[in-house]
Length: 253
Image: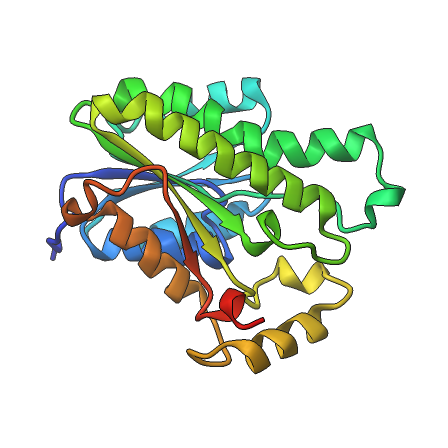
């Protein structure tokens, strides 16, 4: 049976949607009634499995491959998307990448890698998505606490996330008159596949658990819930904002 919900009839694109936080976001939006385009880069099997799952809920769901920081690849991604949908209402720029090394060991290729995948992507996505947003829309970028805080081995990624947040503010100002709201969700430490690459993973998780007033564990579903809130009609006057979802970690010293 097809389900209904507050996002019924809307179409959402979630980049990096096959795993982790992206998968939780895709499930949350589909659960609220949206049809979903799941972008992936390497995780083809996971993306197809997620789409099959969402279709059992009565949603239209398609997997589209693409690298979000490469203009030609984003062109191809939207060419494929438009074979299935003629509109977009929600874009979640979740795909991210980077190099976990001290800043003193980084070079130009690392800088470009981080900036193009994590920051340039929001602009490329907006340029393609906005003409498909016929009745306004939502563009939501996923950031992290490293945009505001110094974290070991996270310098270039943190800089790219800070650039991302600045671009969100600029896009919010430019697109607001068109009924398109652009915001950021900045997540605390979530134990996903990405965190497994951190050399200090155990320390990060323990520190987060110790210092977070709202509880020791932040889940992908918690972050997906924040994205969902920004998609609601009631959030129509939230624009250019960074919503921090960390259980209070950042205020705890």
